Amino acid sequence: MPTIVAQTKPWRTLLAVSLMLVTAGCTRKPGPASALKPTGFGAALVESSGGKQIGATGMVLAQPLLVQVNDEQGTAVTGALVEFSGPTGVSFDPPSGLTDSSGQLSTNVALGSMAGRYQLVAHTSTKTQKPVELKIEEIALGYQEQVGFQLDNKYCARCHDPESTPERVSNYDNLETKPHPFTEGDTLNKMTDAELTAIISHGGPALNKSALMPPYGYTLSKTEIEALISYIRLISDPPYHASGMVYAQK
Ligand code: HEC
Image 1 (spheres, rainbow, N blue to C red):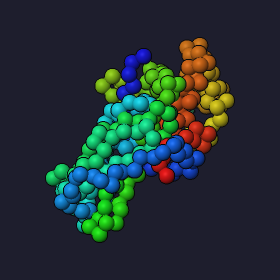
Image 2: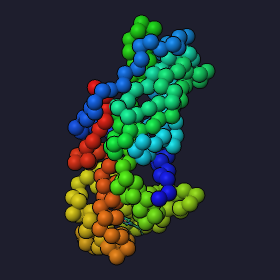
Image 3: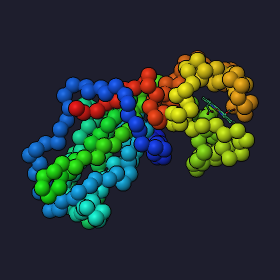
Image 4: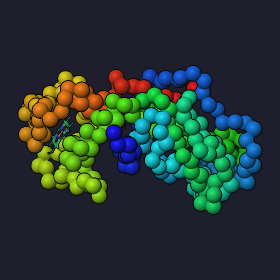
C-alpha cells in the first residue's frame, strides 16, 4: 500500500467539538524545568499552519506545525518560549523552543497509535506568567480509514474535491449538480450508513439524486465501501457523532 499523503487543505471551519473526550491514560504536560530562557513574552498564540492535517496513526504529519506568538498589538514576539503538549502517544520534535525573528516556532508532530481526532495544545506565558494556550486538531487515520482515503483518491476525489492537484484535474466545475467534499459534515452527517452504502453502490438515483453520481457496486467490494464510509465519518467537519473519538489531555 502506498504511504498516505496527508491532506494539505485544512478543514473548512473550526471544529465544534461536542464529542466524547477520551483521555487515555497519563497525559503529557510541558516540563516545568525547561532549560530554555525566554527573552520575549507575548499575549497571544496563533496557528500559522499545520493544523487540521489528516495523517496516519503513528506517523509524522506531512507538514510541521507552525505557531506564532504575538503581543497585544498583534506584533510578532521573538524569543518567546512555546511548549507543545498532546495526548498519550503524540510526540513533538522539538517539544519546546523559542520563537524566531518572525515570532514563529515550528515542530514536527507524530500522532498516536489510535485512529481518531487529536487535540494538541501550544503553551506560552505572558510577562506576568499568565498562561496562554492554543488548541490545534489533527486527524489520525487507522488502517481501515487509510484504505478509504486511497479509494477516495482513486475513484471519488476527481468529482468530490473541487481542487485540482498536479496528479488529478478536478472535474467538479463541470458537474451540473455539485457533489459535496467528504469533509462537509453538515450534509454527510445527516445521511445514515445505509444511505451512504446505497448511493455509493447504486449511484445517485438510489436516493433520488443525480445520475452524475455513478454506481460503484460492481467496482468496489463491500469491505471497500465500508472503508470509504469509515473514512468519510472520521474526516467530517463538524465531527460525526458516532465516530467521536477525540484524544485530548485533561
Ligand atoms: C463523476 C463524478 C463523481 C464521482 C467520480 C463520484 N461522485 Fe459521488 N456524487 C457526484 C454527484 C454529482 C453527487 C451529487 C448528487 C446529487 O446531489 O444529486 C454525488 C453525491 C455523492 C454522495 C451524497 C452526498 C453528496 O455529496 O451530495 C455521496 C456519499 C457520494 N457521492 C459518494 C461518492 C463516493 C464514495 C465516490 C467514490 C467511490 C463518489 N461519490 C464518486 C458525483 C461523483
